Image 1 (cartoon, rainbow, N blue to C red):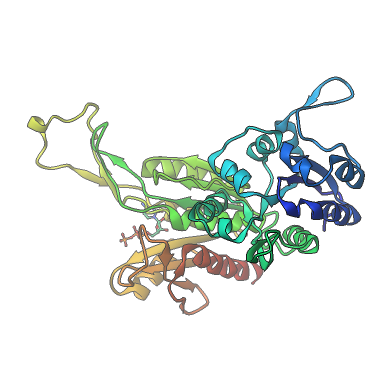
Image 2: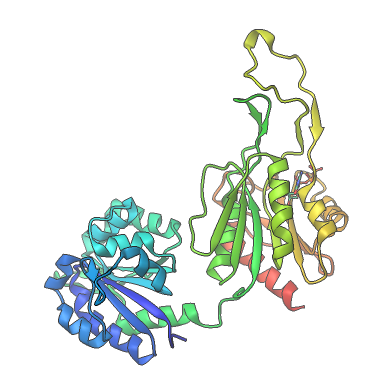
Length: 400
Ligand code: CTP
């Protein structure tokens, strides 16, 4: 799995750094090219000489000047890697990574990495339990970094508890699994729509809805983590997917979303349309801010284009189109009607009658319907877990 893969190994100043020469050796045995990058203080725990010998490359720590006199920049390194793993990762370097601080070569490489990034924190029990540490782990995960959880066991302080870095063999397995053919959507191109749309009344006011974009982002990330190239068309939800493998097109109105989706759709293998698109838009938005004294009694609305139905008409034989249905009554009847009318392969039904489902929450409860199969209802889950259920259902549509 790792033959020819270029792996950047970032080492920070944790005692577990003494295990990294063995990890590098295991990577080399698998046929990977390894570039070790160290923070200045990490050199107190393991020597650059040992790591250079096992990796067969000079270790980088400062700005490295190449034989031809040019320098290897962090940007170049960030583009070189197929994956970067920071192990061990101290609480200090983790906090800097979470804050975007770049005061050494390793941290600049982290900021410029365009490849998947794995991090293996290691620290003493009490430090690990501090709320800042958990918050930083969450933040790094929200950037799409893969968390390699420490284990319970004996710690350098003599205490026992959570904080030990996983053994080199386990770190190797994490990378091998990532690069294995297990990635369900490797080589596939996927479009995902997410968030609300804002329909202007005047330059400062709009009609919108409270969609947070969380469900669509979770779907986009799940596809990217499974190897797909993702085009995310994102309404103004105030958050970003920030994940390697996702290209985001930001739009504001239903008309802009329609245009972007229609441009992208012919290029993709499948589309999952999770956006909460406004059904109506003001017919004549005012060019200037409407004065209170001149407020209209009535705002005339006109229907927006149904983006999903438009894509249903454009759909080629080998493309899959998945829509959402947000219902409050007669859910299954309405969802099946939308599935047929919009020429979809699957519809994800959200009932607003289920608490914890729908807009703004971190959880969702869905029922999946396809043309050939009856409804499949899932329990209330995190939006990430719901995204995985949707991916598995799309995978079986693809296969059959
Ligand atoms: N949708 C769309 N364009 C619109 C409205 C909705 O692409 N102008 C898509 C949504 O992204 C979602 C699906 O259509 O995937 C269903 O949205 P929903 O609001 O449940 O249904 P509507 O088709 O708008 O019908 P109704 O409001 O009558 O329930």
